[in-house]
Figure: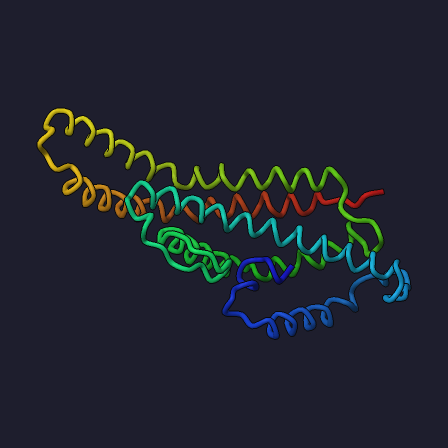
Length: 234
């Protein structure tokens, strides 16, 4: 889970540090958990136990990754309307390239996530998961996997919801410039339109930034609810 979840999976965080954090969490949490059934880890049953825990960890990490990627999608939409789609930076979380507006949203969301003690919440979810998903050979059932896939589609709808005010304003600006172009074809619309759309996008970013927190809280609430509904196959 720590290899895919945001914050912990940043390329700036060494793999050795992730292993140490994982070991410390294990040492701190293990005494408070019920003992799993004894099994030799070098048998097929032990391998199934390991696969089960890996699948659960990846599913939990993917849920929180979707929350962060929703704001990346919102930044891409806004950057496209502002004309900043060509301004690309390398995302340290995924190693891929994303528009600078997406990086802005990612930084804001990361800071808010830390301010909300999201990193502690992640560890608490791991501890609680051993109660309703005990160690065994059973993996996530079909309904849990379907909920996870449906939550992936929520990434796009949430991204559109975050970017909707800025997209609407930029769309109105573009429609207005289209009317002006039809009325005055000799006007160099590219020389006038780009500064106006850029300025409008920056103004809308300043107005929509305070709305990031309620969107993030709602998405984290949905992610926690989704993880708590995970069940194992019978």
